[in-house]
Figure 1 (cartoon, one colour):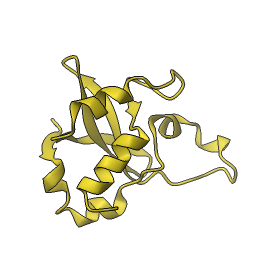
Figure 2 (tube, one colour; figure 1 turned 135 degrees about the vertical axis):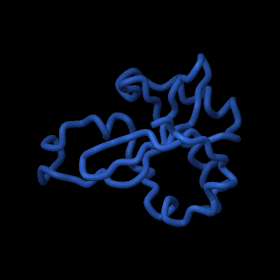
Figure 3 (tube, rainbow, N blue to C red; figure 1 turned 90 degrees about the horizontal axis):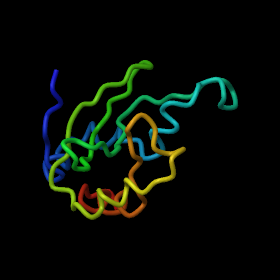
Figure 4 (cartoon, helix red, strand yellow; figure 1 turned 30 degrees about the vertical axis):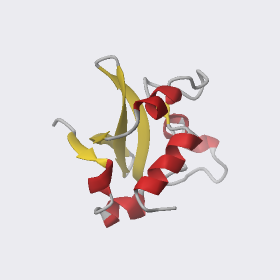
Length: 117
């Protein structure tokens, strides 16, 4: 199933999404073995934001994580290109599986646009 496209403005209306948005999950933490964390388990359930390269352009993506399964749920439109391009300059150990973590600058912009700051 092809992920849908959604604007940042429209995301503001999805209260359930906003409540389950996980700013603490990055591609690196998503792919870490669960037993490496103290206590042996941690929940990754919720929505993770990351940047992927689609047709040679960085695109902000939403990944849904639930019950140990993950799927790309949507592409987010309306994000400034310069903020997306900055994400591709991350250290190699943070960019895993072609997935780039969002930067603090992009996170701040998103929180503002989503009405979370």
